[in-house]
Length: 178
Image (tube, rainbow, N blue to C red):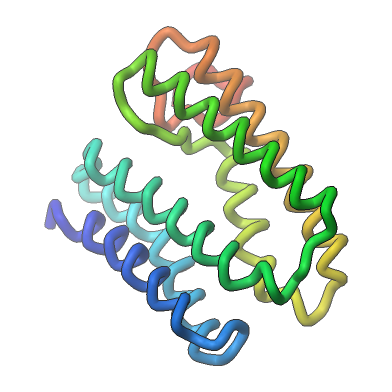
């Protein structure tokens, strides 16, 4: 039972890689994409409910999230063709997130991304983006994503810089303990 959440996270990594070879925004793409999203919701839930949370599981979940985001960036970039300011903004967000990871690596000797509400909201907004592409102006969607992602990235960096101990499940800058 202990390995089930880790296998779910690992399956998201594999399924994300498969998306590279599937026609973007096709039925097959959406089936795999939504399966990945569902796996992201249930891996941590199952681990917490069964008392099988682990450092490996936390790392696999974060790796799967980054893999999924990276694959989507590669697959969807040619379709959405973002404006230069969106590209610069996204790179800036990436630099802030990388800075947060470097701070965590130096302080806690581990690669980590905190599971804040802001990061969860960012994940949700990023998740619905490919689904809404056909219905809402992509520029507007990208600006919304950048605003939400900026706030959550800055919050995570502040938490990493100001915390005395690693708190992977810290909910917010305004909540001390998870």
